[in-house]
Image (cartoon, rainbow over all chains, first blue to last red; front, top):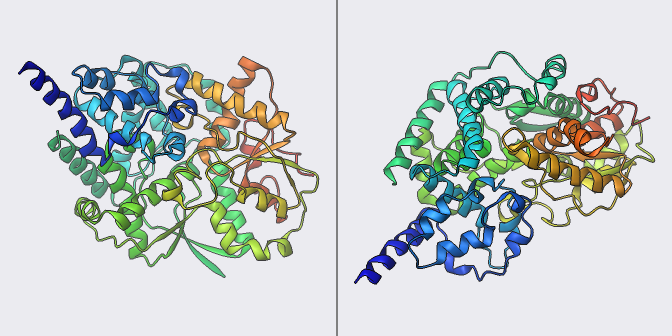
Length: 192
Length: 284
């Protein structure tokens, strides 16, 4: 009985990943080509093909191990893996799916904190004005990450070259963009 | 007169204003009329697609729906990531009617999927290539250029439907038409670290160093790019690469800047003075 319960739980994980990502995990035959060409492999605790393998496995700890890994966040979405996969398995998209699940399960790897803070600052900027305000993003990210001094020496040049705008541009349809955010955030939670 | 819809995207109005300037100047020089999508919003970039799938499709869908309403049939998106996000959304509207319906509900618009998205190279191929040589005022003779495509300009093939994902050659053809020499080098589709520039800076410094060193060892005097992220990582981050690995001194130019120079425009007009790594005085 306990065995059946265990495999149900892990089948739940595999099925959930497949349903959310419209993916078929059994397509992957573990050739390792994705890991061989991954530019971020040095920064990952699991290699990309190992992440796929864990998603395929009928074992309980797979969910936690995958959703807590640094790999899913250190994937830079360059899509080299998906492009080269001999089975046309979309690994880059799998990473997107796992990231969403990891946020929802609140198991984001501590090494990925800054990446998530960056994304949060980025999205907040769009939500407020409809467009990305890069100066606001830099300031917002620095406040969130407390990485206050990195790159500040580049600011004067960026300002004189007019590569940074102090003030954001607010689009007319900013309320519409805000509504898009609210609906997408609500629907994602509903999908849990 | 070629009329093209235009989606500059956020970077071209900010950190890549040199790209934005040179696109507009080049368009004038080639006789293109750019119709900017009125009230466009950000495509959401990696921040959206890495955290919320629906948001990552809905933000570009609003842009496409606006363009469609405004009568645009061909939409130029010079930022490689913007064009990739727009194309990804278009593919969903083509292949997944159920999701497309859901997105139209979210954006409260009715996008039909009719807008054709072009990256900057495709726009040049379609609307400049045959005439280009006639318009050249300053041949870039002797200039050795490494054409760098990066990631999402050529990946994934079924989304972008453009060139070859491993051995692209379309940029080389344009550069050669300008009179320059395209160097043969292996890392032209390797990733620069893209959006990790601020959040995982050491990785970006490593990856950009590999790309710069490889381009140089294959004889490049300039790297040509068609993506704001590629440019800011190879140009601005080159200062950090210099600190860790020694001085690189490799100017990074947008393809549009090279075309602009060849059309006879000044370095200032195409934004070359805005770079971190000196790019003026390279084209004589």
